[in-house]
Length: 221
Image (cartoon, one colour):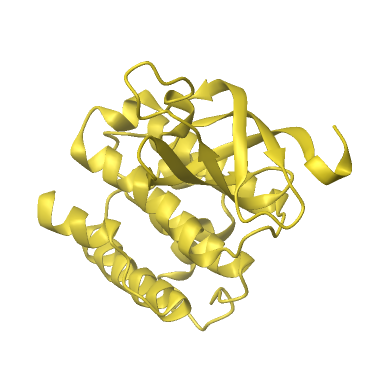
């Protein structure tokens, strides 16, 4: 394909959000392994026989074939293959909203077209851990750990803040522990609630707007 017409690339990506575009299309925000966050149009997927519909759902991870044109606002998805739809997170309201919360935080805090393998690995690993740990006593720590690590990666982090000796091990695990360690943390409603509030306030200060998913989760769960 000539440079004037653009180029076709294949990249791993995770869908962060979708919306209706024109009459039958979807416009999605994809966080890609190679190009960062992209706005991608999925043509005709809202029609009854539309192809690629499954690839345009939030929380889906896959390999995407994209048409990129220099200067164009949106890329175009022309094919792809599913890697995971995270089915375990779609079986209940809380799992769905926690998965969407991760996607919303990354979407709202990340500018377009700024590649970051660190952020791609962060969202991919957090979604997989959230699915594996669903129903475990401490699975709600996963979204907190994701948000704290995302803030660090975006330059808004607070890992170096003074934390009491009692709370320091938890603080360090949430910021730097393995995902299995985070998923295996014991439930502690008081500390979890305080940290969720801290994370939401910090994130909303950074994006200068309210987050939707945690507010919806607090009303429904």
